[in-house]
Length: 114
Image (cartoon, rainbow, N blue to C red; front, side, top):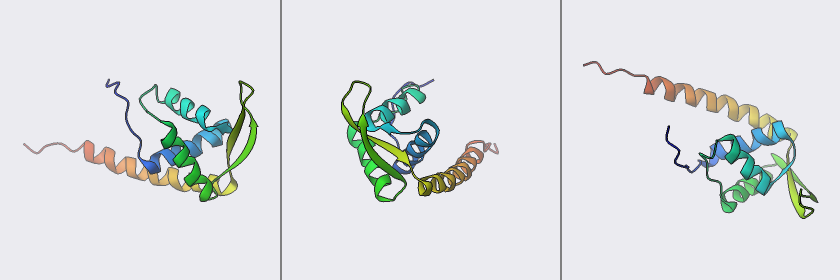
């Protein structure tokens, strides 16, 4: 298995952020990034710029909301939560991803006619 860390496509990151917030509830940006890296078994690399750009984009779309709170180490932190519109988008994105993954899987299974 290749243990190189990889970059994430924008739409894929949005889907992963929405799903993680849907399942785990409100998280601050740093915690969200570390959790996604942990779930990926450290195959993903999510730097601060990547995760916060995605969070801003999702917030502008109305798919996540923010609220200030206190982090585990008693620091002020912005927590992100999925909205009702975000849950609907998560459903659409999940269906789209599953269709795309199915097509890619079929292509990868093609056999040479030699």
